[in-house]
Amino acid sequence: MKNEILRFEDVTLTYHTRRGETTAADGLTFSVREGEFVAIIGPSGCGKTTLLSLAAGLLVPSSGKVTRHGSCGYMLQKDELFPWRTIEKNIFLPLEIKRQNTPERREKALGLAGKYGLADFLQSYPPQLSGGMRQRAALIRTLATEPDILLLDEPFSALDYQTRLNVCEDVSSIILGEKKTAILITHDISEAISLADRIIVLTKRPARVAFEHELDFGLEKRPIKRREQRQFSRWFEVLWKELNA
Amino acid sequence: MKNGFSEEHRKYLARGKRKLALVWVLRIGILALLLGIWEAVTELGWVDPFLTSSPSRICKTIASLYLDGSLFYHIGVTLLETIVGFVIAVVLGCIVALALWWSDTLKRVLEPYIVVLNALPKIALGPLIIIWFGTGSEAIVFMTVLVGIIVATLHMLTAFMETDNNKVLLLRSMGASKLQILKKLVIPSSLPAFISMLKVNVGMAWIGSIMGEYIVSRAGLGYLIVYGGQVFKLDLVMSATCILCVLAAGMYFLVVLLEKLIVKDAKS
Image 1 (cartoon, each protein chain N blue to C red):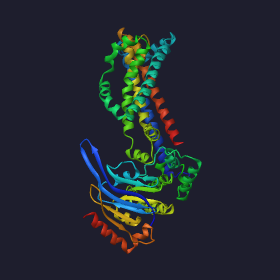
Image 2 (cartoon, rainbow over the protein chains, first blue to last red):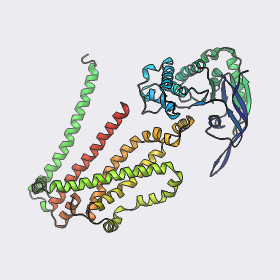
Image 3 (cartoon, rainbow over the protein chains, first blue to last red):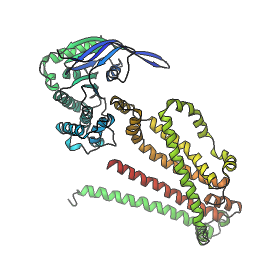
Image 4 (cartoon, helix red, strand yellow):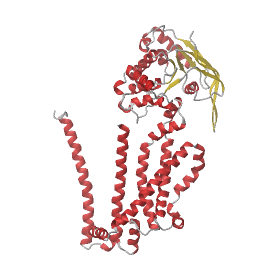
């Protein structure tokens, strides 16, 4: 059993606005092991994004405890590349922010970009790239600071179906290649099944862990291949029922 | 296939060129037509040039102003007041907008003051300005700043506040400080709004300086217009107005030029 890298212990979070308060998470308990790919699915508006913000330390829980060993990188729904920066400058952005903009770090980040097919686009501006390429650049930007955990907030939902399958494939292979721990938030059941080692199903707001499943695809990690396997539709049915329970 | 383009593409380019030429011919044509009619009706005695002036009389007036050496003096006075007022208004406006973006409390405290100052017709402060700043250029520069600063502040504050929240979230997830968010995201993403604010404020600066010269002045184009009106020299009024048109257009195009430079800079 590998080490726990992230742990939520009885985490409750309440949002306060002038109109009132909303409990977004209530007694949330789960953990993620090193090297694991965990997908979290739940009905829309159940506070999935809140959960990532808690994991990233952007929000402090009202009660309970979030323990994280290591740094994390956040990847959002849209690529959020800055249009006034070249792809290269975009990839260096987290290095600048974290004041790690050293030649070695830049070299490493460029190495990643080259390895995953962005070498020819480094001097281009984001609007000149296709949606899939931009999302790939966003992932390399996230990886530039070498985070231990990747937090993926529906990173494919803004793409069209064809691109989505391709980018899903890319992201999966990059994450496997770099041996990263990843937490994927999504409302897309088939995406969760095709990518994850483990799936956590949340309840309606306030979010709580409803079900947890260890997937049985063995060593098959490629999303496209998984979609062809017999377990795929079985898992789909199980999760669909749980989400609509 | 000549010069790498297909026949169809060359036809398309040619159509574009013809259209551009037509637009320019019509633009200049309209101006020439208006000036011609103006000149003709005064020349034929259909309207009294004493009331409407005429293009030829305007040319003569400008020439005589040039000969007695006062043309560039008046232009210089107004231009200096306008530019100094414009620059001060833009710089101060941006600084205030930054402060308001930085502190939500400050923004909420000052909001009603800004709203009232924005709605207040600045010309109402004319007598105060004369008493505080005298009758020199300082008073006019102050008026120009007053007219421009609120517009600059509100325009830039809106731009700062419209910064994409997801991009802010992204930077925060990287551990960015507020100063870093400002430098890396808020300021660069507000650059287009800055340019459009400059364009609006060119107009504001001219309103401020001419209004200032109406209230109190001994020189400048606004002074010439008021003086010409008082002594019924409509030629002088029209001449000064024409010069103003040219100057205002010139200043606007300088901003457009700046825009091209900055945009090019961002892409190089």
